[in-house]
Amino acid sequence: MALTRIALAQVDTCVGDVDANARLVLEWSRRAAQAGAALVVFPEMTLAGYPVEDLALRASFRRAAEAAVQRTAADLVEAGLGDLTVVVGTIGERLTSTEPDAQVRPTNQAVVLHRGQVLARYDKHHLPNYGVFDERRIFVPGEDTCVVDVAGRRVGVVICEDIWQDGGPVSQMDEHDIDLLVVPNGSPYEEGKGHVRTELAARRAREVDAPVVYVNLVGGQDDLVFDGGSFVVGADGELLASAPQFVEHLLLWDLADADEPAAHGPVAAPLSEDEEVYRALVTGLAGYVRKNGFRSVTLGLSGGIDSALVAAIAADAIGGQNVVGVSMPSVYSSDHSKDDAADLAKRIGADYRVQAIRPFVDVFESEMGLQGVAAENLQARMRGVILMALSNAEGHLVLATGNKSELAVGYSTIYGDAVGGYAPLKDVDKSRVWALARWRNDAARDGVFSPDELPPIPESSITKPPSAELRPGQVDQDSLPPYDLLDEVLDAYVEHAEGRPELLARGYDPAVVDKVLSLVDRAEWKRRQYPLGPKVTALAFGRDRRLPVTTRWREA
Image 1 (cartoon, rainbow, N blue to C red):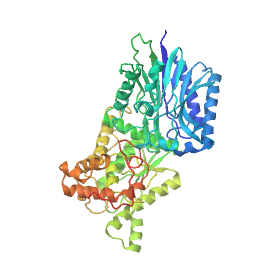
Image 2 (tube, rainbow, N blue to C red):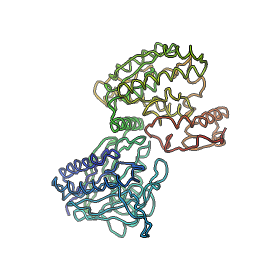
Image 3 (cartoon, rainbow, N blue to C red):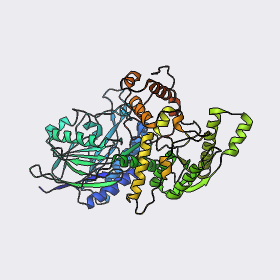
Image 4 (cartoon, rainbow, N blue to C red):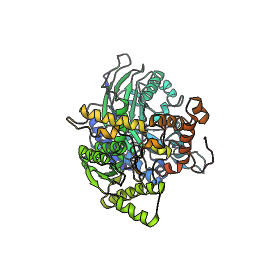
């Protein structure tokens, strides 16, 4: 039997844009057919977008998705692609029972299209209900297996979580003697997850004694980033082909006969840890800007490391010419901070503006007589007002520049530096902020993004002690432990849910532990009001970590 070419269509969809997603399927199916593929596999929920959340509960939305399925099947034939077998994710429906009071509920579905018909439908069995997932709340599980014939090969279909759980539809593939298992996925990015996926797929491939084709979404959706990284593993678990991360890509691989050596395809070079996280942040911001109809962003440029890194991310996401950087000096702003802000803007080609806040602050202080923290917060709030005014007047998306460490301990001003529609560093701790800034500058020197690029972040923004500059001589370490120590304690407490006894058993100073835990516990109300930001760690504030604002439980 001749080789059967399989195409993995790693695409960037938009939730709710059913028509555009259907056009995407047609476009990439045409590319697959032109490349000689007999089968093209798209990611989970391609037609509906993913995750659809409570949109799935609307019958009108489900009807639109089904209409797109039927229209796509017909359009493939009209485009001369009828002989191509297409596996595409969508939202389905099924009755919860055969009883008179049975309800029609949504399912997470994959359909197999061939010669203008829906050849098969498969509803996801295992519905994840942990971390960022709420699928058990939205969907009902499927019960049937799905095996179809493609060019004389028996191809099994399961969806994402179905391979993460033992048993279920994968274990039932043995009796069907499949030649290939295809898995559409909507697997969000988190640092270190890539090798977990390939190891899991390798285990399933050995179980079913057939290659596994793993196709993943790419792009940003609210606070999730999908990194792509689609791949094929052989029946023995060997990695045979893989797609690059964070870009749309059509990966081609040839399925050989069982008695022939497995064919190898292209294997994408792995990214370093810092590059992977950086590209995830760029992808998340680019997706949020584009899919919400913005063309430009604005942010405050303080001359510090956080705003510098956010500005660089924004320039890489949408182009420096679409970044409006605003320096808003106060009487406490140092000359080097103002110089660094201007230097950064020049390096990335941003629209740079200066708006002093002293006139606004003077008016408030003369009327209200604010002192201490109230006066410090007033400065941050004046900056927030300026940015939001520019947003309203000119249509920019405001970016908040705070990082995960600051957000954890409440070092942000509500209605001040916390204003904005998106926060690129929300899930990036301060130690990683420095590492990413250094990586980005090194990447510029190495020509990773473009030849002869000037490092975007001024060196002094990286090396100087961080400071909010809200009072004379202020630095962050006046009231916080050193950031490397702070981030260690935060990682244990926030991401690994270790309590005070466990932290003390690790050998941390009780005074440091009590201070950090107290700050974290008191700041939950602030975190609830912070903008969306891309998830890049195993546990991000927001969907991953849900704690009550009103609670009397305290670790310290």
